Length: 469
Image 1 (cartoon, rainbow, N blue to C red):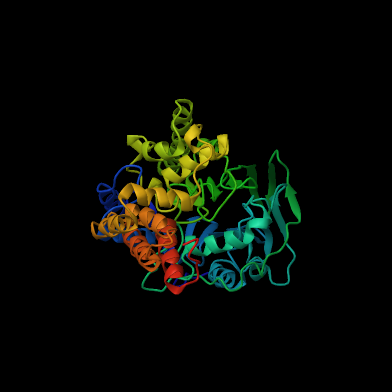
Image 2 (image 1 turned 90 degrees about the horizontal axis):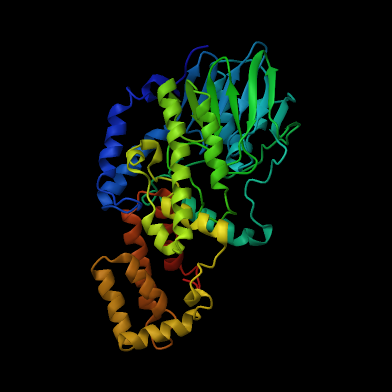
């Protein structure tokens, strides 16, 4: 089969061939405070633009009979060509994006689909299966716990959906959009899940080794980003499909759209098991594959070590009596991992992870009796105004913070001012909008940036009430 316009060579993304890009990313991060994701606006934008290369649209041949489609939606989909058919791993978000990838795959093989494998149940990995199979009825593999990816009670779906839109910047204008950290901003989302086909083969908790279309293939249960995750291993080809337990960014150990606790220790251990296989290629759930045994194995081991380090540091701090606010500003990656391009905080962040670990292990209470029964927001706002010398003085402090580009403080003060009956609430709202946009401009973490901008737009359009802005 001849290559089409979406084809490019995996050698472009080996350590040697991508050296200039990697050095550029690392150089840009030199201006960033450790543990934080704020830098000057020009650097933040350059970093996000550089990350765009990680989801450039195309089909990559990762082994003689293995192809991965990147950038056709947010996640990756892969095709393994066997003797009498092909195996598809993950199927994108919906049938339209999947159809584009399937057409691109057909430049390499027109054999029928013998099996589909879902690495986990996030919607961007399972929604387009119908476009790959046509009228065929292949086996569809998933774990016993398939469907438990989100782990959040359905009762909070309304607010979670709003926060999802903000995190991914789904309603941002083209001028405001950059990307989603591990995915492009402009994806086809109108047919979400319409091509989903339910699993027909359950992979036991002990895993599975089998042969499909003449291909020896192994299924390994690997809880991490989701409890229903597994990674796929091709022992002959030495290719590993990591699902969402690995991608080229610090992992999203907590998603700001709202998730149940993601077991960080399990995640670290699952990635460590991948590294122990010494793969020649690792195919992430998002972003470009990493080729070469040394590079792929090192990336996985570093990833596992980074997750474990954040966990261990947080636990030590907890046992020293420190609360999540303090720890979120203290914990950082070990020095030898801070310059790794696949650990830059484009998607997940260390501070978010620390807070999630704290809450996951101990719940919301930080052990300080002062915080056991905090003042209600309106009473606290009145006391803050009294402390400042009155509402006018507190408002002046808010405006001064904004003028000094102390955006976080300006935003926190605006949240007090909004509660005061004698305050200029329109000014408080206006200040918060400006502070949000100021913070967004400095963010290279895509979910944070998208959330700030989305929330600012909602405030400006009047979608949010005076109480909750």
